[in-house]
Length: 393
Ligand code: HEM
Image (cartoon, rainbow, N blue to C red; front, side):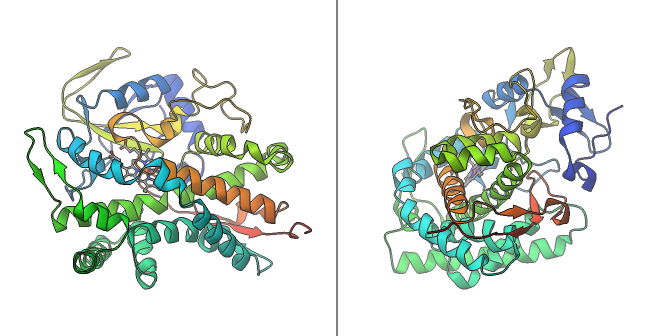
């Protein structure tokens, strides 16, 4: 009997031995208490992502059902396609890469300020600040409400001792902020992503063309603001902990920083910030001799798939020279593949380039760090770090 309790702090601290048991002993697993199914082998997770007709995203991507609040991640085709086409035109690789100088500048300032103390919080003082400020600049969230937006995103992802009234209140506050920004931008258009979305036209399968409503724009704001920083804020500490645990890999990056882009992919494979993607079956599915009924929740366990020894050699070893996995399932796969993939890669790469350049001997104290139980993401809540001596000029 596998003890898989996705909402226990023990699992949050170390999910990987449970994932291995699932892959080996119950690749099509049913959790009776929480009433969900789970797929853990790489091949099964990829196949389910590809079959978005059978594995629907409507109803939410977490274990428990979610109300439809207009998020892209919860839409099925054809509606998903219309909305995704529109935002994909805005979040292009070129537009994101054009932000490199800004990201680097912001990263350097954040790191320098944080490292003024002998010991700082790698998560709160650095890893959250960088993506929160970058996405806020990109979509135009004013400095004074960024703290509230982060607080809301955090509450939304928390599980365990969460006060639902607090979540509801935080959502109302966030909605007000977004609707206000939209009204403001309609009155005073700017050269930015939200003005582009306000003016963009959505075309459905009948060829009907229209602009987005305020509520639809607010949903875009919410998903960009939340997904746009919480995951990167988890990926950067995950990477720092891996470099601390595998010193020879840190050494390779210090000797040859051109390996950093590949290391970013290995960081995401080794400890994916987004650990599971929920779906709901639209028909009965027969897999590995087990029948998954229609209309049930199925979790695609990304965190288990990226450690599958059937796909990766020595998967529990962090190896910055590992050949990239072309599917890069840690960014999702198929129609829901991450919209922010270019931005996320840019931010994580620049974070490690600047960190290793400025503080090559940084020290992370994982044993004094803390985690919270979260819904479908995994990462540190606090993580003490000593920057060590800066590199001699
Ligand atoms: C390390 C950073 C990131 C990781 C690991 C990550 C991971 C993912 C994954 C796994 C999905 C697919 C979810 C599913 O299939 O249900 C996804 C979708 C999405 N991501 Fe990211 N993401 C990251 C950064 C970002 C950033 C920076 C943004 C914003 C600019 C963003 C915006 C989105 C959006 C809007 C979707 C929904 C796409 C759709 O439903 O078609 N993500 N992400």
